Image 1: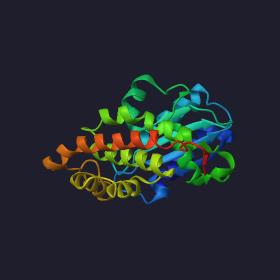
Image 2 (image 1 turned 135 degrees about the vertical axis):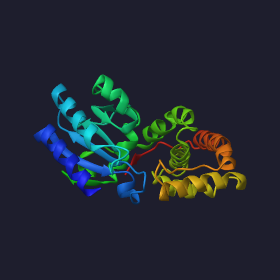
Image 3 (image 1 turned 180 degrees about the vertical axis):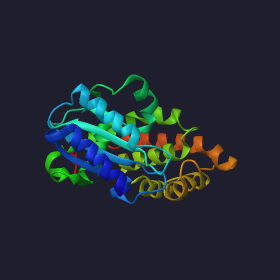
Image 4 (image 1 turned 90 degrees about the horizontal axis):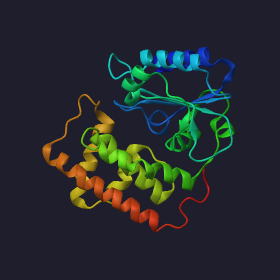
Length: 259
């Protein structure tokens, strides 16, 4: 990852210049370790909103540096302007491989409210600085209620992607469940290990397979035995139901910021 991260850092510092307050690496690269299919998750804190030429230059560079083949890892980059906390937070610029086709056709997205940024800021506060001050010195603490709202709000979209992105959807649902139940933001495989002890025995093999794929296998090499794939929907439905029950039965959930 080092060469790719160096190239990303050069792109960002050249494009954003002195307005770049800090660049923060988070996700699996800092929470556990990079897995075969892990993204490079980055959050850039900027002093001011990016100008249109900066957005286009940043997008053009990311389209070259990020990828799913040729030895590249996919890059997830969110840019947030330094300000006090509000929900939903506004993302000033966002890039991810799931957006590549749209970004190639339409250009960079304008600033817009993006609830998932709450999760990314919370992760970045626990990550490490590529450059700039320590993340907890400059990134706002995310209230637990907003972290949970952002996590739960993404469930319908996750369920729509279950058949096409089975491994990632199951692990993300496990992480949401663990966040709602424990107040902690765990790495995906750690959350899945926590969920395994809560699942009925008949649903554990499908979650266990998702964890094994996450730890050992690229997306291109991902394989789902028919029996396990058939259990993915019942497992997802069970986890979503438990998230709902846990959330409704926990009146203290949402009190206090994520440290």
